[in-house]
Length: 422
Image (cartoon, rainbow, N blue to C red):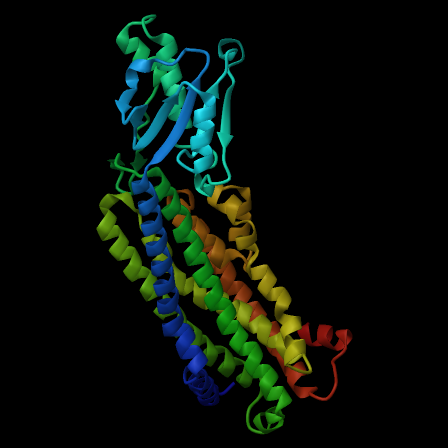
């Protein structure tokens, strides 16, 4: 193969792609648009939930069993109210009056302690059609009512400190071991879970999107060249192998630019978040650092296979169908993402690390979720397998690519494909 002609084809394909408005919008405009939409939606939801929290929550309580300690309730505008954690519990003597307030929307829910409570332990929870959807199950008030009932039942029967521990047996202080071995105690469990699942998911989707986007350009340009009969002109001056290499490197460079732009935005957000949240967030720097290499290797492997199979199609639609199988194999880690997030270093994660189709995405997820659980030789071995698989895919793909390009007017038989692949 002649490097100058490969470079010429690569330069032509690269410039043809990067000058498209669709490419520029997808590379620079789409991330900004998604960030703006996400920020707006998050801001609106935060404002709405804040407003709902400021409105307060009122729940009704009817104690027919006479077990509730009335001393915790205070008189307020003719009603007895117990306020705890921004939640108001209004004590009623009459269930009918409480039901009227529930129907008018003053109460979110009504809890009735029946006469047989000491035997059955049942408390009826009544809701109206006006109860907000997010508050229908009374998740904010029911733990408070349980605590109130325990306190009322134990009042005068146990020493004060022992009574407190029976009512609230444990207050868990969440902590996490940081990357430098220092224990971090100020951990928001919900935020920590969100970050530890969102970052690997986002990185994985980013890598996969860049891989499939760059490979999709390959399929599109091959199908376009075949349909426009430009193949005959190309084959008069360059070999099919040179065409494959030029397209692979040129469109790969365009994909790498796109991936670099997206990764830069991710790094900027990660750095900003880590600075804002201090030690509460652990940014997977190793996964970010190794992702460009995994993208290049994954693209060369997947792209060479897609180029070869796309060249066998008679038109663009057929080429897309022929290459669909490679895309499905590449997204397998996302199909089992729950397992990989829960057990990143389990048997499934270890096996998928060594499979070239799933290796790039699996290594990124494992390095993001639990970097200490993946050994250096696993990462090195996965890269080595990818390099070997890429070399083999280019060798076989070049032969199939030559068959598909040369036989533009007819479909090659399976026997011919097998003979050329060998």
